[in-house]
Length: 467
Image 1 (cartoon, one colour):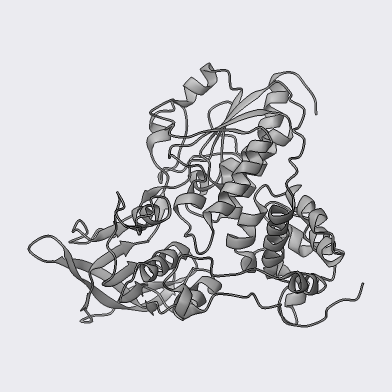
Image 2 (tube, helix red, strand yellow):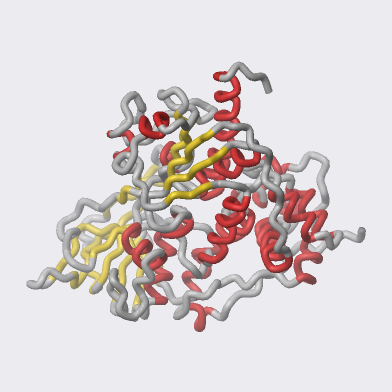
C-alpha cells in the first residue's frame, strides 16, 4: 500500500461560519470516502503504537485505520467496537489532540494523523450501511446495575453485556445519555448519534430504565435487595458551581448546566417551549472551558446580538479545545481575557442589566500549573448584558453519598475508589466525573471500562470462579 506522506491532515469540511452560527446543524460535515482513505494512508503503522497508549480505552488505532486504508470500512468499525462502545461519539467530542493524536509520530514533523475524524467516519459508515444486529453474548446468569447513562455508565454497561451479564441502567432523566444528551449541543454532537449508540447497547441486551433517581426512587441498598450482584455508579458531576458575587440570583443568570439542559434536552429554543431561555440581546458567559464555549455558541444560535466569554486568565491558559475556540471565534463570539466578574447588576424588576468586572494580571503558577490571576487595582468596568451564564465548573451531586451508608467521599464530594474503581462499599464501583470531578467523555469511558472488568473479577471471586 502506498503511503500518503503529506505533512498536513486532510481538512474537515465544515458549515460556513456565517450560516452555522444561526442554526443547530452539525458544524463538522465529515470526511468523504476519498478523504478518509487518503488520510488513513498517512498512518505509518508504527511498531510501538504510541497512539494506543494515549487512548484512555486502548483502541488499536493503527488496526482500524489500516482497515479504512484497505477499503474495509465495516472491518474498521468492528475493530473500533472491540475497545470502544461509543465510537461515533468519541470521534466527535474526544480531545484527540491531547491524547492519541498528541503522541502520533506524524506530528513530529507535521500534523498528526486525524484519528478522531477517521473514527467518526468508520462509525458513521457503519450506521449508514449496516442494518444487521449482532448476536447477543451468551448469558452468564448474573445481574448487575449501572447508575447513570452518561459515557462512563454506558461504557460499563456495554463491557459487562459483552461478558454475558444481564445489565440494567438507571437514568434519572427522561432520556438516556447523561451529559451526551443534556450537556453537549446538537451542533457538536447530534442527538440521533447518541440515540444510535444507545440503541446498539440495547441490541446487546442492555436494559435502560429512565425517570429513576437512585437515592430517591431507589437506593443502592435496594438494588442489592433486588438481586443485583454489583453496582457501577456513573452519576457524573451535575452540581453547578457559582461565582459567589452580589446579584447572582437575578433573573437572567443561569448555570451552564441549566442553560444547556434547557436547550439540548428540552429544546427551549423552539416556539412555545415549556422551559424557555432568554433569547437575543447581549450575553456574557463566565468561564473558559468547553462548556463555556458550548454555552456561548448556543447563545449565538438563539439570536444573541453579542456574546462575550469572560475568562480570568489569558488565551494561552484557556482550557477549552483549540478547535472549539477557533469555531467560536469564527462564529462571532468575543473572548475577553484577564477579566473576572465581581458583581451582577439588575433593574428594579430583578432582571440583569450588566456585569461588573475587574481586569486581572497573571502572577506565579498555582497548584494547577497555570499562572495565578491577580486583581489589577482600580480597573473595574461594567459590561451591559441581558443574560449571564456561569460556566466555572461542577461537582458531584451529594444525593448518592447521602443515601448510601459506608460510601466514602473526599472533601469535594467525589467518590473515593481504588485503582480498579472499587469503592468503600463491597460490590459498589464508581468512575467518571463522580470520582474525578468534571473531566472528558473519553476519561469517563476509560473508567467505566476498567470498572466493568473489576466488577467481573469481583463477582467471579465471590462465586468461587476463576478467570
